Picture 1: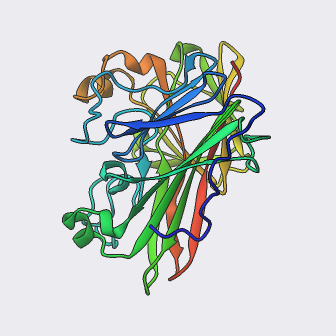
Picture 2 (picture 1 turned 120 degrees about the vertical axis):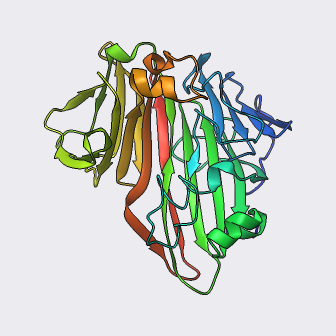
Length: 315
């Protein structure tokens, strides 16, 4: 895939240890000198592990398929170009739920230092991994279902205090297209009954558990006490924070995105999903998913769109 802003190569430093990056069996693993690490499958460019200070921050189902046979249940699946079941009257109507990005095999485009990003002050503090997907790499079925010429570059940056994931969408064709995108992140928590989310107060949301009715969140914090499936739109605050026992655990910072989904399947829905294990795993996860899902993003020929998140750990 051609990239107009190809990152410079990681320059070895003589002043100390450098991040290590290696690929094996369809995955890329990066580790900082601190021991922090990130692991990304080429299938779906799905981040399946992010460890900070020896602690895993992402939840992955024990029954998740990591062999490319179906989208991964857990981690950070990439949703593109449609969120949820596509509408019948739209150009994405022939695509499966959540589109094709999460069940396509991406190319690993290489690593670079990240000295100018929000997560790094020097080349040994962070490493950026780039993954690419274009129309040429899609299955024949996906090409027929969505026949646009596009290019995606997904950048995963591991920093000493956080993780950044950014999706760059380029329209390489001669006609405009519409899309939605979402980073369907499953965060690992100790006990969902002691978790609260802040940063969504006064925001409008569509509650899919309540027949897709529209509501406004009246409380400054949200607790998960049952099945939760809310699409928050036009959120004014950039950061949604996850608190455990009243203590700040993770900050999820939207970058050029104003929508977020909050999801937890709870008891019955977890039982009904064959790839959700253990069945009481809902007690140890919550999805906070940044995206552009309220309506459609229109991208003219030759234009690009970029959006993503920075997640900071407070442990």
